[in-house]
Amino acid sequence: MTTIQLGFIGAGNMAEALARGILRAGLMKPREMFAADPQERRRTLFERELKVPTTADNQAVVDQAPVVVIAVKPQVFEKALAPLAGLFGPKKLLISICAGLSTRHIEETVAAGTRVVRAMPNTPMLAGRGMSAVCAGAAAKPADVAKAQRLLGAAGQVIRVPEDLMDAVTAVSGSGPAYFFYFTELLAAAGVKVGLSEDDARLLARVTFEGAAKLLAESAEGPAELRRRVTSPGGTTEAALKSFDALGLAKIVDAAVAAARDRGRELGR
Image (cartoon, rainbow, N blue to C red; front, side, top):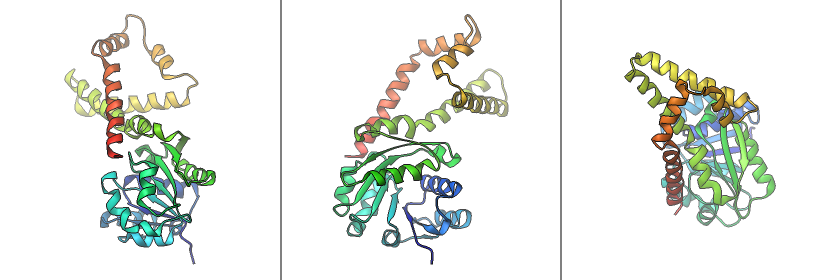
């Protein structure tokens, strides 16, 4: 009889990305995981595509899984976890990927002694190129953090940071993919304004960023040096970058990251 090793409360995109990474890396078999979600379409996806059994009953997952990933929106965390508080405790490892929620808040919601690890992954986990950060709660042991890092690392890279920097992580890497997608969207739209067809502009923007990201990943040089190599004095790239500077792009990015960090703090209160 298969033993459940990992449970998910919430079977949304992030839970799917993590489950796919774990399966891809061979860390667990599908029936060693168990996922709960109120939406039938998400349960169907897990069962048909991942072969992971599902339920609409959160309690069934907590009852059976020694490690539980909480993958719900922070706004519904209390509703999802409070009724199950007594099912946790020292024998449970709870990995939270709820943005903004501190380990202390989580520990106060569930039974005393619950080993809590807080994590902040991002959606590129779906492509096996995620970026995550983790921090430990009061009762979490080094082995618990190592286990969380191993699970998250199946779908990307993982770093450990002090908890007071988790909102900053959320603002940079958690929300960061949306910034990238938005800039790609804007670049394609600008291409249309200077005469390109929509299809050509989208293709040019998307493949250019794909190639640039791959070059950055594979290069020993940092982004500043790679930018300098593309920027010929008096050339077209320099003209564009000077325009960015004149419009205050650096200040815009600073303000955006600070806004995301501050919102994370608000969600945790």
